[in-house]
Image (cartoon, rainbow, N blue to C red; front, top):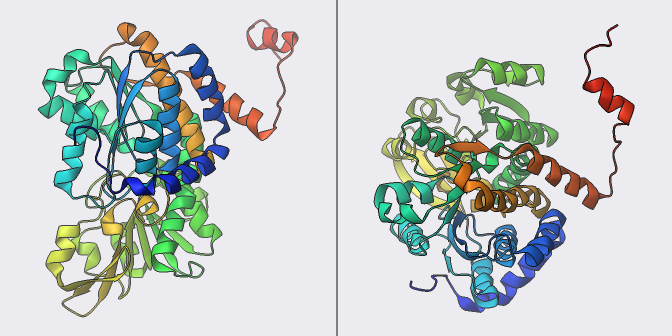
Length: 419
């Protein structure tokens, strides 16, 4: 535990091949890594990262390392680790990793503490578990802290709550809120990878099924559109009238979950809140209904309530637990209610994470250079970083765009001319 804790070092060669394959689809991060290697903007910085331990994350860790950072990585979800990738980072890149796929909660938090034993200057979180543990249990380390970054909606919500309470002790950049992250990661990435996880776990045909999406934020939009593209009849549930109206105008049926629960075949929660699927919903669901979650934590489905209602529980396929209720109906929970796109599949495609992790790398550089001028609150990604990442992505895709003429610039900055 002093140096690393992984499943098996012998898996390293397979992990390196997986990392190299992902790197081919991450041209923006590759360009950033090349610059980092020359400029070393993170020299002297100790970074503790709590992220999904995947091939894409490995390329981010190597980029931070190229920039001069001393990096340690732990998992942000007990089921999201790719064990061969963890082994490769340890063996080939000398990056300490504390993560084993399927680890229990005790091990998960022991690994969080191991990452904090690194005495970081900066945290890089996906769900704010690292920051939360640092503030609640490891406050002696706060004096070292320069700042942090946060990858996901759930984590940003938690951090903003901390800042509102005056509890946040250092500035954090909400990488999640960058437009290049929203567009690629939440909408395109979550949409495709969640469908991938559900299909891999169940091998069911989506066409003709009634697919219920709980939440119509960026992730919900992507998931609903992909499910419809596979031929499913999509229902959206919401608590906010604005995204609910948008879902209606996008052509989806919108109704309360208590109504959707009666007719849905497949359910997927993407809200960031707890008990979105609850006892009253399980009581009216069809026999054979499939329950899944693509929000960060496994609280969106009330699993304790489901277990209390059940007479029998069994693993009928990998990542598929069958709960037999007292009336004989069977409900199927995927991936223990955890992120189904990472529990049963491989998460987002590398080209998607290229954008997210480019934001992470440049946000870390920005934090290292500007933390002294920042307050103890949550900041958005600076617009110039967002636009630079979009520019690099277009460049990598071979796409060119127009530029404003001097006359157009003058017109947009003037007020004299009217109709």
